[in-house]
Image (cartoon, rainbow, N blue to C red; front, side, top):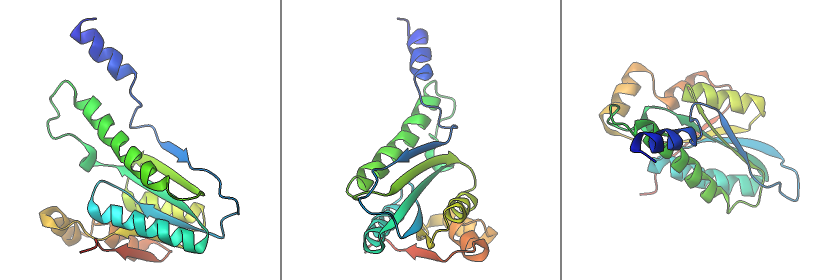
Length: 175
C-alpha cells in the first residue's frame, strides 16, 4: 500500500469528530434520583470537576452527564500537516478514553457526550433536557487566554453563571 493509499485508508477508518458521539455507561441497580451535568476537557481543573461530580453523583444517587465540547483546544497546532485530521481525531478520542476510564469506577448511570459547539450553550442544553440539579465545571485554566476570554465575557463559567437557569458549581484544582 502506498503512503497516499495508507493515508486515505486511515482517514476513512476515523470516527468523524464532527459527528456527535454519545456513550452510555452501565445502568445502576437503582434508578437515579437526580441528574448532574459536568464539562470535561484535557485540563487539570476539568479532571478535578469530573472527580468531584462522580463523588457527588455517588452520594446523591445521581445520573451523571459528562460533556466534552470539541473546540480549538483539541486542534493540533500545525494545520498544514498531512496528518492534521488524524491528530485532531486522536485528540478527541483521547478525551473520550480518559473520561470513560475515569467513569468506569462509577457504578452506573452515566453518559458521555462529545460534540462541537458553544460549551456554555451545550452544557445548558444537556442540563435543561435532563432537568439537572446543577452544572459542574472546573475553574479557569489561567493564563493569557483565560484572562482575554473573561475580559470579553466569553469564558464558559461567566456565560453559565449569567445565563444558565441552573446552579453552577466551580471546582478548583486541588492544590
